[in-house]
Image (cartoon, rainbow over all chains, first blue to last red; front, side, top):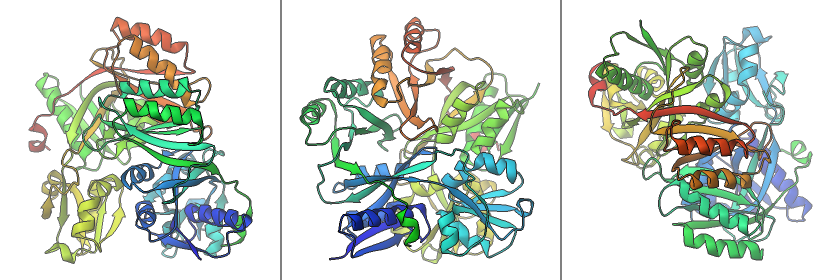
Length: 288
Length: 288
């Protein structure tokens, strides 16, 4: 049986690199023989595809070390009730400046995804201070603008440049060398094994001060909190959901006790499953 | 003396509406005779202008009730040491579909800022399901694309449509009727009066679990927490800054005691000042 995986396309995006890394890992587990990757035009459509059972898995970016949370992913996880996190993986992000321009001085326009532009802001201001920065829906879409003129450039991965046979003028142009993006592998299968658990809740009194109680419960159980992120409930300004990652499996008795206690001090609580991290090997680059 | 105010331009953006509301309020306080509004091409450049003393004030969006935090504003506040919050104001956001197309079926492309597209996602999927959505840097920039063809549309405010004398096909197309954006008026003058105080800190152990202590301190002092937002430190994945809004003035003895205690359990702590909310009157629309 073929396992189908949705990712934010087109080919050449960092999401596709993450999907290839996941396929590589599945192969190493003896499960990668028939894996089909399917590109979707937005992160929301990628996640909706797995929630609607069009595909078996979706690869969704969750958090970048510079830009922070990918809010559409958190909001979709809350919205689509059936989604469970199956695995996580962390991909290093190394941006290249891809262009037919002979030198940096010739560049008048730089296209890329807003997050990639943001991650190279300091470099762009130093090296191409007069270039206009134009947002695109993906790093790969930015490459489409290179045909028009040798005065345009795109920011994307070196791997995308090779895939589309485009020239690179500068590599590793990120402002921060430690740039990486965490992805989740989403599916609709219950998944309760692994050292990480993610959950989210709203609070009965609609005040972030009421967050103290849930944090006390986790601390009392000795459960380490690795991330907390607030999102608007979208009902009215000042009402929030809280997304929490903890270092404990759903089968851990401490977390089971903690979850019972959390139910008494939250309004709605959703547990998105337990999962482990897939190690990234240099494999994916070689097998597009 | 003229007071200069930077905002995310060009003319017709919601940021300009907020700047006009601020000017209207200044006039009501007897201080609005000589106010000059200056448009900047990005939120970061708007905030940088006031930090560099090019202007006296900057109007920066902070948080939308649907999309959540405007992260560039939080990151800039942490980065530029001299910035202080002078006031806050909450602007209702009501989007219109602006187009020369005779009907919805004729529309092939919809341009707008990614947040505005996101806020009308449900409406667009129902009414223009085949239209391609194209991000722009501001809602006003989207209007530039209308000249090219009667098959394009832009999402912006009704006020922008009137300002540029463009036809509107649908009004109030937001998915959520309660859509509003909170803005901060930023300056470099110390400002310690008002019922709200904003601050941010990093934690010594780089684990969100250490957030419990600061929240306990605020609760002990009886200080209400109205917002908490995490942002990456940008050093490495999993290290965060926490931005906190409290309902207390910096001159409040409870907050003074609380801040002393917070200094003992945080790594770096920055207080961005105390401020009050400016009431929005129907005035700004009439005086572009």
